[in-house]
Length: 402
Image 1 (cartoon, one colour):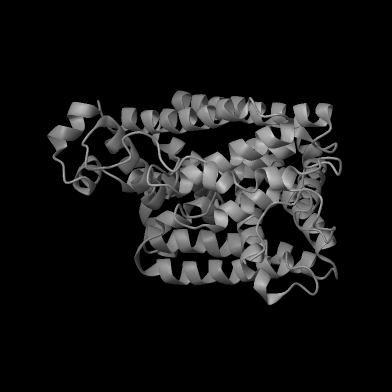
Image 2 (tube, helix red, strand yellow):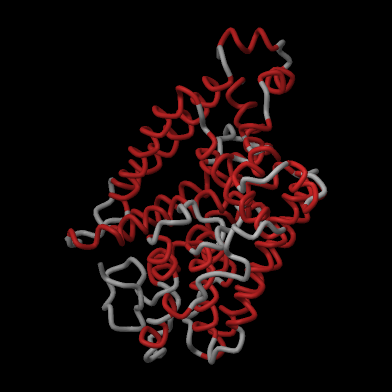
């Protein structure tokens, strides 16, 4: 009962936005009654993650029983999406979102991190094709990162569907992951996009934090919030990261809440600019690929990263809803690129929503650190012709073999 309530509150408000008193009130217990079972909030957090990892491990183990990677991926996604449907319908207990891992602190941080690493290794085995060369380790890591990122991002966009359609959505996501987007007739697509990494912009204006500006504060706040959670970052901490005073912060920002909203708007502007810059490409496949590569490039640049969607827990409910609404509109533009590609023949028939949400999960909200080049491999793999399945690699496949 306590774990159920805590997981739901953590999912809605983030780890730092919930107290033991909040959890107690949710289940009709006094705070000291909660502390009888969990001496500190850190212990409760650890227990929530332990339960979530256990549930995930069971799904992974069931999928791992199948001999081929394609079936393993499909089974895992179907069972996980069914779990989310059961949670939404009240048939299963809520589980904590893995995006909160970044803000786990104290003595429980190490065991929680160790457990997550073990889970990651099992997911990596799940997405390893039979006979894969050892040299492809980076690709396999990317697939595991992508699958875990998608599993968490799905909790944001799936509620737009009827729960009875969740498993169908899982099949559509698996189809894109396993077989990519580019149509066989997209001759030269891979070669045309081989230079997206080098050609995408490295930074935006005012990338140097030496210039104490509104942009510098927003960039510093975004990095800190992504690393420590919205409730783990104070005005003082943001100012100190720039060697600035609180007075300088308030000169450029009204308050912390307003700054969070501004950080989201900054991220949305980056996405809009990437989409607009790609809109003039010759076909839908190239538009989507160029926009996605530009976003990953930004994530890895000095001007990055983009703000994680979980930061909305630091906003009032109406503002948090507006953030999701804006992200939904942006994802619809990615979907329009997919539809363009199906019309012009550069993209094979796929579910536009599934494809656009994959682009969103890897291009913006990814659980991949800003300085980790695996993000680029992951996004390239997610929109290539033969992303993961053992299909001939000469049909527009453009992610590097490493």
